[in-house]
Image (tube, rainbow, N blue to C red):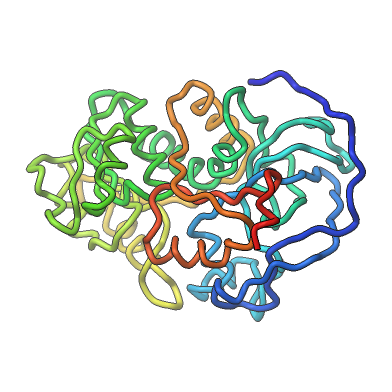
Length: 346
């Protein structure tokens, strides 16, 4: 980890620029406006945001779809938080009560609250220090997607050396981390992506690439010890046929499906079927905690993973970028530059 460097504290403005919404809406209806700067509460710090990441979860909470997300505590009729965004990197500029882990001036990354803004509060339990040699942009896109991939590869699938691992959705946010992490654990990795993104997946370290718009998932003619289903909507029955007799299927996320439950139905079928077959078929809810972010920081510091940033924008471009991400037009991760002048892009 890096040594702590403390800058001379600067005055915190009472207002800031942020992307806002007053209701669940299309991403294109989001607006860049001036709002009050938040203050940290107990166990929180205020971060001057250098950069923020955009992931699929942002689209869900902006639109309120599938509707099950509204029941998860994010607001039934309208979002409880008027500023979207979770991933962030930046410097601590103020600390709340009961904070011992971080000081003003610390360079941090992790999961914050309302991060598409010049300043954002964050629970200290969801932050880590940025390792030396990692840029603000790289750190900003790591915690959500990288944390989910880390838990899928290590904690749920238990990837070990010499395993054969298939990553479906290998060119996306979570998938790009999953490929690198599985390779770092010594596995032989096959990534599934569109033909147009096959080169990106190879650059991530995948030994083989299957272009889903050209070849079938079983085109390699092998059985896999682990299948990570991160993208697409392949039926559980199809995914099970890709496994060895004792292999593991992990369904990551719940994209697609109905407007009410999304892809949760596929996850439920896998879990219910698993006890009756030799293979293990499961899913998980990603934990948002410092121990996950700290472990990810170690992989960033060692070079085991390098965030695959494919798109860099300013705050004003966030609405269009969320739409492009949802439409599958982006490669790798999308990052919002804020402290580096991104708020001036109108």
